[in-house]
Image (tube, rainbow, N blue to C red):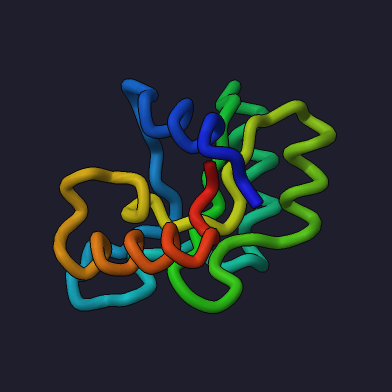
Length: 111
């Protein structure tokens, strides 16, 4: 599980890049990067000097893969693995706020 410190560090960054986003607002795939592609994305991030990676998970496995996590460790990248950023944004909307509330209540929100 990711630490709240890693999450806060990532979200305080001035610049972010999002991988796997479709331009079609109706396409659900715009929300996640498939795990089969994540290791390659991590390689490209490391080569480009990116020091922080967030592997999104909204439902199911999300973008997390064991090989991508291993690459992050090998390359010294800070990683948030398997969290939805909306759980940590104060203005993410009602549905995400309710989800955050229940995750906190159940002790499943990183601290």
